[in-house]
Image (tube, rainbow over all chains, first blue to last red; front, side, top):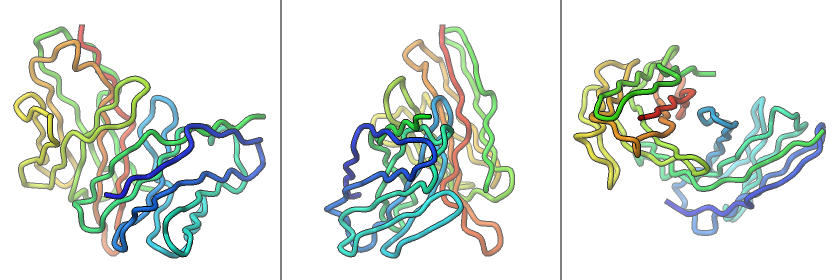
Length: 111
Length: 118
């Protein structure tokens, strides 16, 4: 699976948009980009995933660059409860759906 | 969204005893379940993958005789830590992936089980 690179930490003001970047420059054509988050001492929570088109759901938007070498997760109106570690994961289609977690980005939403 | 439960949420056991952790998918059939372990301040590490009715596939370095995984039904998987030792103390998390009708459920995670071996 392609390796991902994320900043170790980011800060965001409550009510503002949080834009979390992820670099996956070695991604292959059949690899999906997944985003999960983990609030302290809880299991990870699925956020969103995509292949090459931008995706949006009730939680967030996923913007994937045209060359697919990077992506951005957007939380449109961050709240204090969005403080968590956010993981960007690249997964090969049909790989028995295994996810390899890196170190992620600790997003701290400040009041 | 899909719900995955784990039981117990916390367990303390004595060294040398065995501990069983249950993972259930509550509103979908989990064709594949995964078990992860997370040590303090570290990321999740995949331990094993199990498909319903099949033997689990363990990741390199994970002792299959120590961490027994059973996935006997489409809604239940169990992880048994046999002859637990203090170094097995960790946060154990399961996840499930499956289908329900036309809906595909990506990996949804349980809340985790905190195991402390004394």
